[in-house]
Amino acid sequence: MIDPNGEGFLQGRVWKLDHDISTDVLSPGAYAIAPVEVRKLHVLESVIPAFASEVEPGDVIVAGRNFGCGSSRETAPENLKALGVACVCAESFARLFMRNAIAVGLPVLVCVGVHQAFDDGDGIAIELSTGRVRSVDDSIDLQGESLPEEMRDILAAGGILALLRTRRDTG
Amino acid sequence: MTMAERLLAKAAGRDQVTAGEFVVAEIDLAMLHDIFAAQVFDMLDEVGVDHVDEPDRVVVVVDHLVPAPTAEAAALHQRVRAHVERLGIGTFYDAGEGICHQLLPERGHVRPGMLIVGTDSHTTTYGAFGAGGTGIGTSDMVYALATGTLWFRVPQTVRFELVGDLMPGVSWKDVILHLAGRFGADAAQYKSMEFGGPAVAHADMSSRLTVANMAVEMGAKFGLFAADEVTDAYLIEHGGQGCEPFGPDPDAHYEAFHDVSLSDLAPQVALPHEVDRVVPISTVEGLAINQAFLGSCTNGRIEDLQAAAEVLEGQHVAPGVRLLVAPASRSVLKEATKSGALATLIEAGATILPSGCGPCFGGHGGLLGPGERCIGTHNRNFIGRMGDAEAEIFLASPATVAASAIAGAIADPREARSD
Image 1 (cartoon, each protein chain N blue to C red):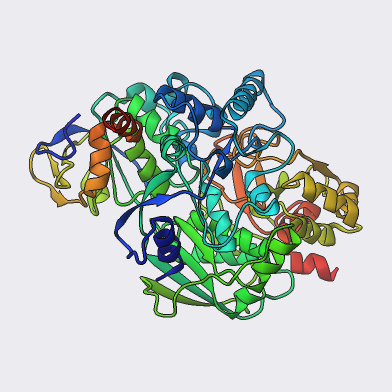
Image 2: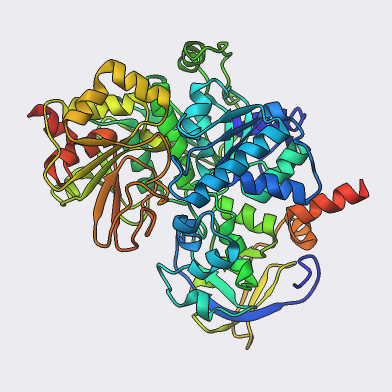
């Protein structure tokens, strides 16, 4: 993973999703207590049945407003991370999804305009530390909201539990 | 300071905090339910923590998989019980006691000004008491249990000033559906909502719990009511000490301020598959349904069962329609037995479900097949939420759900009443 506090763009292929993608869609309730190997196979199946089988490590999700709305399911960002999704870039996130994504170490970025600017299969480049979002051919250059330092530190540690371990080891 | 600022300042041991800043706050109460509890306690083990910072500030509730629908769920519950025992968790409500967001208020765990985290998005429910309740994930919960603290960004606040009396047949469920429809599912994203104004003074705790519960459907971190005489009376009635008033400072700064009149409000319905696709009932009246669901942490209280029973009194559910009723707790079931509401519901053809979350989160017990339509009192109608992805979920008040069950189609409870 690119250092969320450092320079450098992560690059990936875009999967474009709509507004209000809920955690019911990202982590269906029927598999609530299944292991992540099972859960990840059902990510987005009610809207893009082929997603779990066709997504590749390094791919980026570009979404509309209110991504990850609904139930508190940390399994939602965890499933995406398990499938290798490198980053979710959206017009806005539901609070709980954003908090959970940071907690499990899945990079997220708010970028107004991204939903209209990118289509399925486009190449996207994202610099987490600055919040810049570009197309690989540089024809698109957007300024997202870089995460506050406190949240980037958790991401850099690899999630809040990794941070807890570090603090316990050093403190 | 707003209510959110006041309670976070207190939890952070500060005189003053301002929206936008990060604080490390002390957690007054942590709630875990059966879906996540075992996992959280396992994770605690994995990070090498063999105890909980403040076990008396932790409540564990078995409510989502109740009674255990599968052998895996039963095994999960065994793990939960073993962890609860091992860690000396302060309060444990095992399967059958009720839904977490019903039990914590009902058993006196929630008090004004507290900061409460739960592994459930509807933890905002506790805002009905002026408590900062908010959902967190499992990793954050592990951190909170291990350290007794958690980071928060102090949220901006959107204030809703509510005026006017509700018409008969219209409830506070209709109010929160209306607000979601009018302002949108992301209107309070990352923010705190405060509900105030003259209309709120008349709202009982049951109504406030419904509204605060669904604040999260507008994206909110907290959904807060000031603590007043109504709160005080509820706390005393439920065996606790009364409370002092707790509200915003007079000079509190709000990001937005909305005046909303409730006097003309008709019963509201949220259409599939978004909570903010809300219309007045006249728009969807007559749409045939297969299932009607009365229950959940939003509307499974005694007041909700009573409201439905009033509509169903002497009536019967339409042929081909399943009316499912899940009282939110054992106490609610007992009260409904005493009041006669339960008998009315059963005579009208209702199936009584266990006190739990099963159908609402799409877990078990009352799921939908392809093309089926359900109208329910719960809080979410997302695609696939209650079973098949081709099923449709409509959200409404207990009275509307009851009237619809009788009609076999979405129906206006005000008309059912005048029959």
